[in-house]
Length: 255
Image (cartoon, rainbow, N blue to C red; front, side):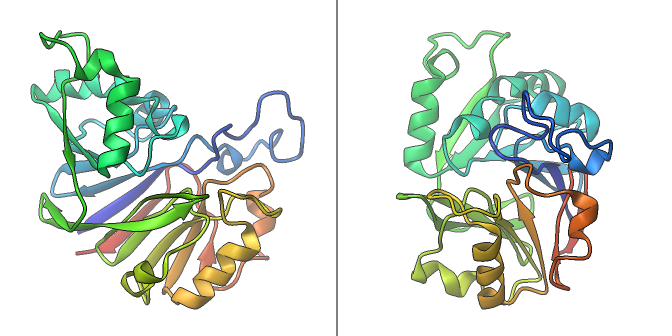
């Protein structure tokens, strides 16, 4: 059985947003508190982390994450990589290096930003012990086939990932035609649905619903969410097969 945990479902500023007193940011419902977007894929006691979000420390504590065996990076924007230093704790627990996978361009940017990790002559105990491996086709990690899928994030092509008849497409503004076939008819689709108003780098609510309608998954979840969405209000508004996730939600994906 493969399990997916939503570690974070929020946009780059998180929810609540600093200095905002709107009904969502001031909500007492814990489902309206959204840390930066990330998921954990688990199977057979192994954990694959998708992105090292800014909030990884708090996510690991709140979701009781005790090991990270591999990391998949979608792209190199700050909210998806700036928790990378937290991986050193998992190095200490596991006493081994952790391999990070992603597009060659993404891994190159991460290495450039975090030179202290990747360009030390001697691997010090107090920095993450990481290896990188660029991928452009299906890989198998711990018995799970994982396929990188090109998606648009504004003008950039970044990776979403497909695994266990599920796809995770955070920070998505569009899907190239050549990626559509791989995403059709999935059991589970997790897709960017940033806010109601259009955004050049992300799908809006209506755009996300349009993509879901075209790809026809059995169920879909919106992620990378701003403070536009009050969780309780959305329950009666979403289409029957579309859901608003919350931090800590676990899904069973099958094999």
